[in-house]
Image (cartoon, rainbow, N blue to C red):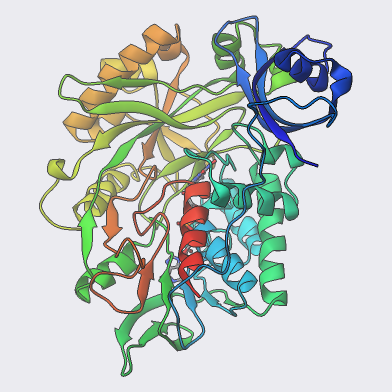
Length: 512
Ligand SMILES: Cc1cc2nc3c(=O)[nH]c(=O)nc-3n(C[C@H](O)[C@H](O)[C@H](O)COP(=O)(O)OP(=O)(O)OC[C@H]3O[C@@H](n4cnc5c(N)ncnc54)[C@H](O)[C@@H]3O)c2cc1C
């Protein structure tokens, strides 16, 4: 029997009504005529503080004896696995097992391929031990950390599965996460969140299913270079041997700086792209919850609050919050020893006492020298400047001191292994500091006390990749290297878990 779409169903938090009843009210029919109602989308409307409500889109099954005209039929979005046009002679080789590589492999396996996956890091359970060691002691493993290893940068992330645009592909991603252990609500929440604790288990289950279905995963295998062979194939060179294929999928994430440099040396076309730099700002969770909900107690019902703030300079440069981690922690996200970078994560319960977010400034290609890796070098300079403390300690500063340009006497944050007090203004270029000042003044007007209550931990350099591996938009093939298919965040075509996974799926769908 058909289902029909009913949108904009409002349900205040304290409403005793059922969704079936509310959908009936919306359609002007009796509740008994609604035989079933499935939630398609749920979002929280917190615009009126103290009067929060959920807003639903539902698919409803109607009593056939009372048809209602003009309703849109609800169709479960599906992707067509048989529509591809690219054919290959050899087994595909995928470099990198982050969301892009993982979902590319998952789709390839569904299509009957047996991809070979080369991942420089360890399986996620072993990797978790290295991340714990880093947090406890500051000992950094260059191959196994928050960025590198099974699951990629996505594994120790906050696990927010936000998608700018919903499509059949994003629906498949949510359904896949649910199939491997995410809660069913992931499929319909406007801002689904898995949490690091659950995400690592889901990734393990997914990779186990890949290998059970013919994929081969080589961990601790770092690709160092590649070169064309006769017959239009590529030889991929790693510290564990070589692989030859006419389909090499390059999904290495934004942290793969050595591989970017190798590509440049091999004349693979790369271009600099817009990205963003700044720091993480942490506040007490109760403070953010009160500012967003009008009261903090309600977060026990609807979850810790997030927020989104933007400002722009007179010249159009943007300053914005990004990747808010309600009830989360600040975590190390360095790509190399001697470089400091931070990011945010949270557990599924989102119940830590703090909420943090990136506060970043847009950096345009025109801000940088004229070469493809200028953005990478720009990030590295800032990361090096911020790595002056003891083992993997991050510079910290109260926001009010940052605004005055003075080092804080004391400042505390959730970042482990620890922080050292520094004037962050001295660690970043002037135009970034100036823009941060401008933006943060604006944020303080929107959330009163934002400056007084906030603590900054620097730097945040990982909101997106500063480089793009130029590819043919139809085939995804590098414009300058046959058989080389760049995908995901490091390739410059996505940002975040869902869009990176989607890029991986979209490539695999191109294959016959
Ligand atoms: C702490 C943190 C929190 C985040 N939170 C969120 C969030 O809540 N929601 C969200 O949407 N996004 C989040 N992100 C961003 C998200 O994780 C990334 O956008 C996403 O993982 C990018 O996917 P990817 O597959 O393109 O690359 P990656 O996930 O970076 O994966 C690339 C993989 O390639 C491997 N690799 C690199 N070079 C080589 C080589 N030479 N040889 C072999 N293997 C190699 C790496 O080890 C890595 O495992 C977060 C990121 C971090 C760091």
